[in-house]
Amino acid sequence: MQVSAANTAYTPRPAAPAQTPSPAADLTALAVAQTNVKMTVAAGAALAQTTGELTGTLVNISA
Image (cartoon, rainbow, N blue to C red; front, side, top):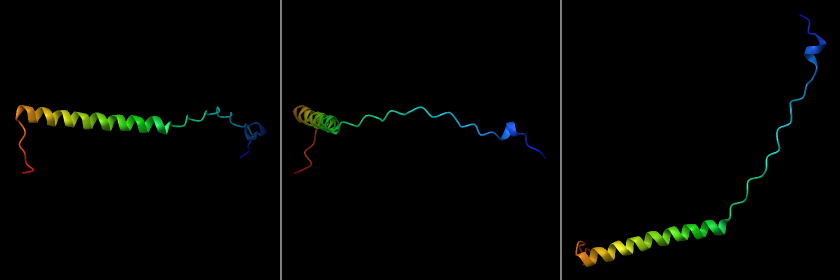
């Protein structure tokens, strides 16, 4: 079996496009957002507790 010279010529692959680095996460903004979510959940729980106590639907189980 013979291989022609045209088939054995090295043809480099095209270069991959340059990737831009992903932006760094702003950890301060993430921490503030997480704190805000926690505060919202805590405020909602406190409001539900107060509402339940005022309407008399909650039972005191700590006694």
